[in-house]
Length: 231
Image (cartoon, rainbow, N blue to C red; front, side):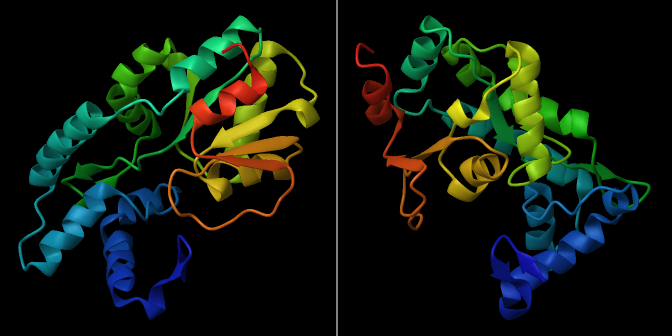
């Protein structure tokens, strides 16, 4: 079985994580949701299990509360993010912001495992992004979060496109641009659905993209002058 590009059976560490996820996420699987491979709660349960410590659901929830608070405090805007949104607004270009799920789970004491509530998970993600959204001048209800289904699925990409069309009217998707720092997660699904171009913010070594429809830049600050010279 493959997990995020790695074959678990060839990677003992990943195999252990997968086994732990299947065990402790049994309640959400029984509810029809997909396994949250990179749930931080599951990773912490796995670490406790490996250390020979009893998996303590309430303790995990307390630790995760502090973890997400620290992540929120450490969140910074990408270079050129606010300037890009201001330029789009100034030129009347509609846009939608989309972010993946953090796979937030809650401990179910009765079932001795993790349960998943998409609305709760979305709320946690929005809360940790609240400061960044304020700095961007974006209302929280204008952000799409990948709960219950997120990147890199075509389902989520279509949801994003439908949201933009609903807010701004029918689109000629050949003139649209998908922007993100992950080619397989932020750009490729949209190109497959007819979006004309992509801008890959290659902020770290992540391989190469030979698709002529995709422009590669280090950050939005480097891309913005090519589109809005006066920005």
